[in-house]
Image (cartoon, rainbow, N blue to C red; front, side, top):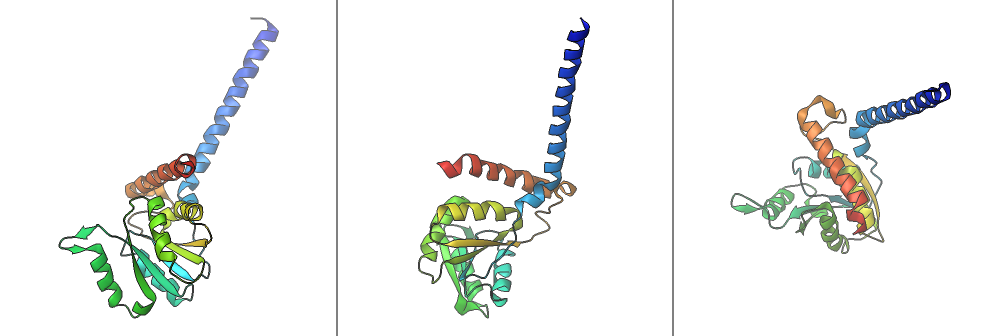
Length: 203
């Protein structure tokens, strides 16, 4: 190999190494921030506080806190219409829960049938249509906030959305690599977020 050829070869290898180092650095930076990037916790004063289905021991409580703090005038709780717990439907259990609240007059159940967040948005739109006001504050699990906010903004026109995070340290933390469950939740949510962003939202 001539001197010029050797120089070009080393130059090419050097560029490959630089690209590899940059890619590895970018991957490490992304991994370190992957959990934090999933979370959007920016509640805005709204007309309605919408609680997404799931984590019933966390999300409704967070919504009621926000109601008491003046972030909304009404709370609407999404509840899967077909789901059952032993001999009771989730809707029945939710209604019983609401009846026992001091804020019961300001809380309403919204039965939903969709299994995905996108389908839930379409179901919830019907309940929101009969509520006064166009400002909606979504309450959902912290890891689910970014994706749900994007979906609701895309699926429901004519309303503005903000989102508040309900935390559950048994399921997720932004330092996702510390616990196995946190890692599972983080990876699963990123897969769903990528699918929504790249495929589902365009379908």
